[in-house]
Amino acid sequence: MQRNLLITGGAGFIGSHVVRRMVEKYPDYRIVNLDKLTYAGNLSNLQDIEEYPNYVFERADICDIETLRAIFRRYQIDGVIHLAAESHVDRSIADPFTFARTNVLGTLALLQAAKEYWNGDWNGKRFYHISTDEVYGALPLGGEFFTEQTKYDPHSPYSASKASSDHFVRAFHDTYGLPTIITNCSNNYGPYQFPEKLIPLFIDNIRNRKPLPVYGRGENIRDWLYVEDHARAIDLIFHKGKIAESYNIGGCNEWRNIDLVKLLISTTDRILGNPEGTSESLITYVADRAGHDLRYAIDARKLREELGWSPSVQFEEGLEKTVKWYLENGNWLDDITSGRYLNYYEERYKR
Ligand code: NAD
Ligand code: TYD
Image (cartoon, rainbow, N blue to C red; front, side):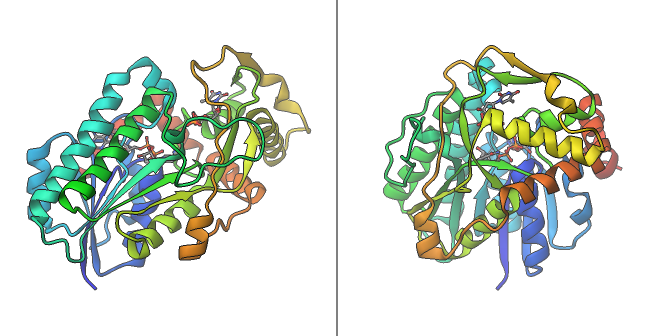
């Protein structure tokens, strides 16, 4: 079947994996990647597929509803996978307004543009919103998990903005009948993640012999999922998920930050050929993040039982692949640190 699929945030970390998967797997689809190219957008992430005939890039801000309307018309969009967002908790603490603007108002503009263009003809249409488990707040230590029924209780400006966007998506289904789906996923890791997030930042710092800033005592717990497992879940849910439902996606893979950091250090040292423990001295305990959520852990039973998805990449294997990728692609990291990556769009697309 032919489809015209709008993917927002495709130049970012998870978005680039989703775009690549869709472009390669569905040659009959036209994949329109809409991205503002903020500091987090890096079109070189998609260099290998940018010449594919079923791929189009549009530089646009999701808050600009006039441009969204034009793009829906120009490409006759019949499906949306919405990933564009401000995504880093520390930045949201420093600058909450940018998060409210993009994550809340941008999502609202996209919902409105889809609703207007589809104009009540919902047949075959889909608006799929990608969200986070952070909307559920924090879990105590122990055996409790986030389910789809867990009450929203966001604590950071990032998670508050994502929670608000989720509510708008549900409101557009309940009020106007827009065919929406939401998924709430745990922490992702893998290639092409911006080196402000824990795993790529620490790999970059190890290779440059820089301190590894562990917040607080390193006792916070996250549930880690390999990014390609997330992209596979998104593909499945976009095609088979039930309208108006939400699904949790998680790795069933909880790690205390300090234990993860030690595994990351030993993996990186081994691959670099350093003696065991070489980089442990780089660990530096720093002031804790304000409002730092203690623990996230997903119960992904619904997705497994209803759609047959489960994570396929075991953590040690995924981490090994990830470390190797960053070490082999040191120029990708260096281009970000030096700011060179910001020229990619002008150099490749504006010739
Ligand atoms: P990212 O920061 O790597 O990428 C975000 C992308 O959105 C960038 O390409 C950026 O240029 C674009 N963007 C930002 N503001 C925009 C705007 N106003 N208009 C158009 N484009 C804009 O983020 P990510 O880690 O890939 O996360 C993608 C989505 O998945 C987000 O919605 C995030 O909340 C969600 N999510 C992320 C994780 C994770 O672990 N990274 C986990 C669960 C859910
Ligand atoms: P991060 O990758 O920012 O993802 P999130 O805040 O969305 O979970 O952080 C993962 C965990 O690592 C989180 O508990 C905060 C911690 N952390 C550090 O200890 N040091 C750091 O430099 C960073 C970026 C994160």
